[in-house]
Length: 458
Image (cartoon, rainbow, N blue to C red; front, side, top):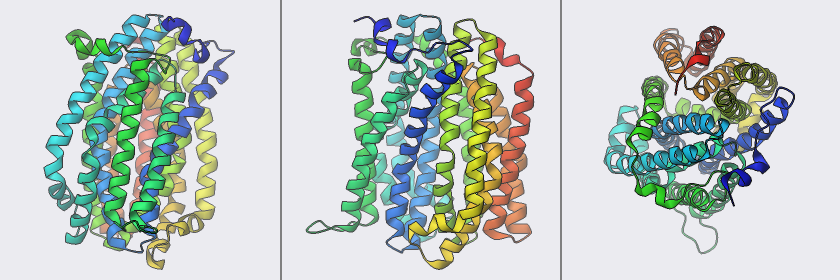
């Protein structure tokens, strides 16, 4: 069966009249996928919280930050692959799209092995750098190393999902992530608490469960794209040919994303140093609040995915006006949905954190942080959707510059001022991040209105 015929079930119409349909078709599976991705570490945090051990909870938080830093590299490659595949798919150049996918997968596999080898021995050093107390570092490094053991398979999964999205398929990545979550929840519960004859491995059990779940998702993603279980099939033999020209095109688009990632992760490391200085209770509470707030990102992430694919395919098809309308319409959806979520966070912050079963002090701090997170929602929605849209057009430099400004002038400086200098503690941390997201959103929107992204060449 030809590539064209296998894609008809999810092929985008790319017309103004069908734009809402295209957005929903792309966004709904992407929302569910990102929700499920978030639920992997959410489940670990929830189950560890029921151990009523702030040290273990803090260890999961710092280790998750380390993984967030590592995944940034693969997310950058996925963005480059998505933009190029979307352009080729919109122009009906299916063979070119397959070749781009093959080179992106090769890059992901090679870098997955490199990250595992390089980062495994540095786990303790990173957690110390993050300001973790000795017991937090001891538990966190064990959890982190268990997850890194399968990274050669799990990290490339992000790249493969990016390829699928570029071709307009957001359903298959969602289905793979669903299977990953089902495995992770059952395995984590069994290995953390040890029901019946099973041993209770506590934090180590969470690490084993998450590591195996991530390996499962990576293997399934590779199987689907090699076998044609998605709209774009990349034959396995394509991986035997290294195409320097195509690989460089992917890297050229990815490098600004790598720069943005390094800037954001460096700022986040300094950010976590500030939180660590507030004590283990504040760090544990922040971790719970982050897990709750991360669920509010889901509409934004899904709509960002839709905008990225629509902009790339519309520009590939030579429809610049449709690309711009896609951004504006998707942005309106995001602002409405995340604004409503902000109201819920503001009204029910304390009630939303009680399921984590931590100590009263930790839950009180976490509830306050969640209520303050309501202030962030409009800025996050605007920044996410516009940044994703520009990346879909191939403009990966503008988001990097906005991130640089945000980290230098808002995230670290304002949070330090509010939390440490003014003595507002964890409340100051979350007020500072609200200032950060709002500032980035205003800058991003002003740069988007200039329209230079339409002329970006990929």
